[in-house]
Image (cartoon, rainbow, N blue to C red; front, top):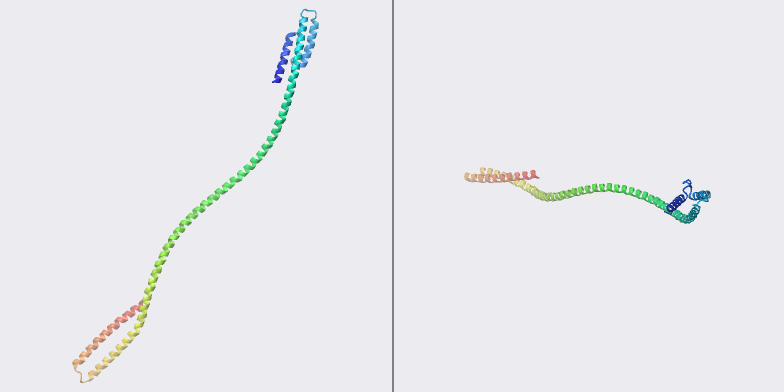
Length: 263
């Protein structure tokens, strides 16, 4: 803004001098100090040429006023230049401060980039770990299903074991009953085996009795004391007894045969 005010003041000064001396002209691309010096020389020459005219005094007064204004403007320009130099110093300090802050921020950015790189690396490793945990979770789910299946099979096996235990108990009961029956049968076989000698003795006694009866019959037939009726009664009794004994022996032999076949 100071620079703009300074340039505006220089333009006004040139315009004012140009109005005072319209016949004096200089190139506009000159610097302001050069333009002022050149304009002053040309204005003095113009006044020297125009001396003796009625407007010389007025022109000199105007030139004096222009010089005073130029001095004021020059002072103002110096003031503006010092302010501008001070502003440039402030700007330079600000520039250095900005550069320092920029270097600090560059360092911070580089550190942040390093941290970001490390964080990305950590995130990548964590992603791999998450994938691994997902796979392990799948394996855990599979093992859980297998465990549930095994528990179900174990429950079935437990039920079957209980059934087998019941069946074994029933079989033990049946076995005990069978053993009892076998023991009874064994006792019966032993009894039969014990009765067999008795049967043999009875059979031998019967044979002796039959022999004795037949012997007595011969004696009776040879004796003259017994009558025919007595002889007939004795034979009948002997025949009845023999038939009973033979029937008993037949039953006994059948029973023994059955027992032996069972054994």
